[in-house]
Image 1 (cartoon, one colour):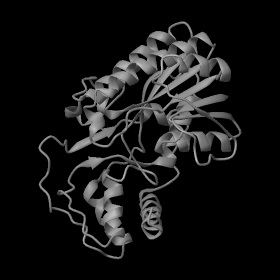
Image 2 (image 1 turned 45 degrees about the horizontal axis):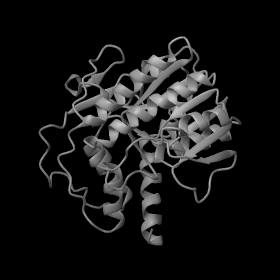
Image 3 (image 1 turned 135 degrees about the vertical axis):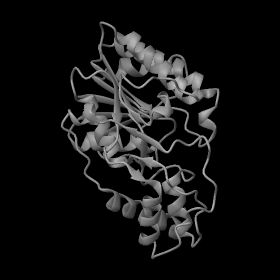
Length: 301
């Protein structure tokens, strides 16, 4: 495939681009600013996708057969309600239109579990209601509807709905990153009970799953991204405390949020049907992630 990856400087997009290049695909990565470096085999394009003319110009130059759209508003905390989400709906629609006009074959939008109604607990594509409760979830869903409209009679459209990716490069305020940073600094993380069940998937496996969706001809619509093995967050916190040298996991130091569902996991049947399987188990992934944060703390970065 000639693959274009938007958001190639981000946590997920960078891994998608690198793994695709390692597999021998022709990979073009879109960056907001000039990258310090890129993995071998990736052609870098600096572009602002929020600019109205950028998508058409970029796709006419690259003419990708496949596109993974990972770029989006990602400011931690603010992205749930930011009005910038609306700009990305428009940008995604322009990107999908340009993809149709340049003869693209498969478009994969990186989506989110926030597009579902969370009260159902276990989310199944095309069964669980799509009733997002945040502006972010609403915008992602609206963006994919625009992609599907552009795809009609032109190309195949799928959405890789990520549930809980973690690993090196994650936003430092997110849960696993926060726990790692706390232990690396010698602090006790301030956590809730951790009774929530989630499907934690290492970013390497998340990226390889997205590529499996990109390469699965005729697989369209939403595809949940997860490992299929839910874990209690208290278990993950306890494992990280052990990795850090038997430290206090910090469970129960904060009250549980009333709006935080106890169960929020994906059905991953559609993903597994592609032949994809996760390669990194939870213990290995947590160890790798903790060491990455320790190395960053030691270097002062």
